[in-house]
Image (cartoon, rainbow, N blue to C red; front, top):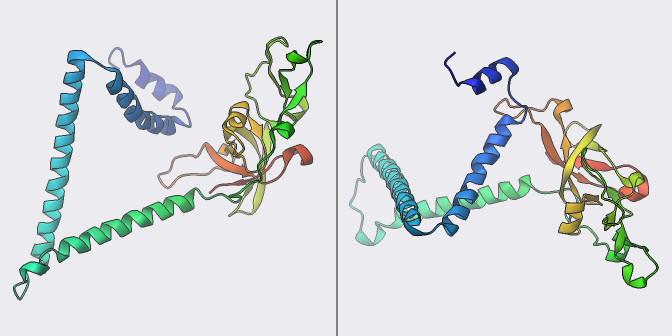
Length: 261
């Protein structure tokens, strides 16, 4: 093997991560945001050079799209063999109108499919008051020092989580209310599996609850489904999927969720 190809050698010896393709896809998706962030803050001659290169890329892309469109329209005309009778000038743009209508219908259909893909079993959830979510924890002899809050709801913290010293800990998540696994039901298989939780993706109550890892009814969890052996149409192993909580974990003592297929 040539020198300095240590990454290829390591990949041959030990293989790749199970989520390597997913990480590459996310890295490519982030490139647009990183490029935009860089373009907004760059100044001077480097900004001019970057905008010039970006303009050339856009022009080449538009040129290529135009060539494909012309090629498609020319192929359609050749297939039809031309009209048998001459078309009046007022009807010549009717073909373009039909094409625009087809494109609009295609876009609408794609948006409907996307909405159906991300539809959840429980679309609406009753909002909880803040007094129920955060219980005041007295600390110190002065009433002005009531700044600590205890979360009496089910929570998820990572494997490497360590509590802050009591002097600096604002949000207290009791050990008895921390969960690491959830009972996830597969809607198509009609089976329930006990799967480890990877993280809290979205809590409908508040963005802060998502950051704290609070789990309530309607919360979207990310669970590890590598044990199920799910495979994508391309043959890649599915490592994690989303599931929505369908019960009140603080009342039942367990987390029941439905897998979003």
